[in-house]
Image (tube, rainbow, N blue to C red; front, side, top):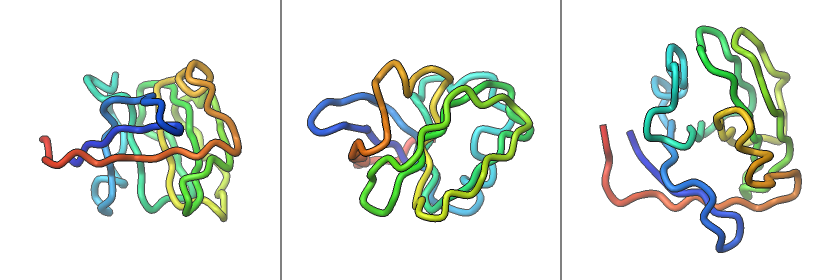
Length: 121
């Protein structure tokens, strides 16, 4: 899986984010995971709607537009839910529950993702 770091401005907020940019990786997402292991979250690209079917953990969902501007933050999503489609969204950052609030992620923030140079399994 491709790995990246997430920043708000020059502030590193997540050291190790999985990047799901193929159909299969987006489809599998976090299904069946009891934890994110050593990842801080998962970035789904392209994506404008998610569900939490077959997930075993609560998540925060951060919807981002084409410029990586936060257009919606949906905290504390339980397994088994379908979230509404966010038409302007280009990607969704799935985080462990409470992380969006912990790092102060809110609408209007501009995030950047710096991809690691190597792939990890």
